[in-house]
Amino acid sequence: MVRGEVDIYAHTGGQYEWDSAAPVAVARAAGLHVSRIDGSEPRYNQENPWMPDMLICRPELAGEVLEVLGR
Image (cartoon, rainbow, N blue to C red; front, side, top):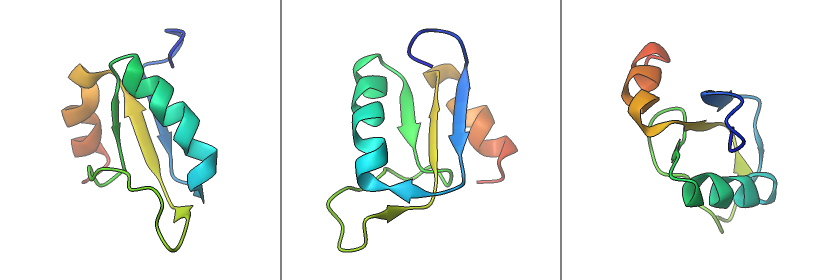
């Protein structure tokens, strides 16, 4: 994604907060859209560290991707 090889990364298999924290920080620093699949902001340092999904994409694609995903 950050290297410009893909436009959209949608992960629905779940992962722990620590598995996505660094990639999310790098994606945000690169100006990419980052959200949960439902469009909400990912929240870290939660009591339950399980994060069920993640969307990272070019900002101009976010609205369409979220719409296609039915969110």
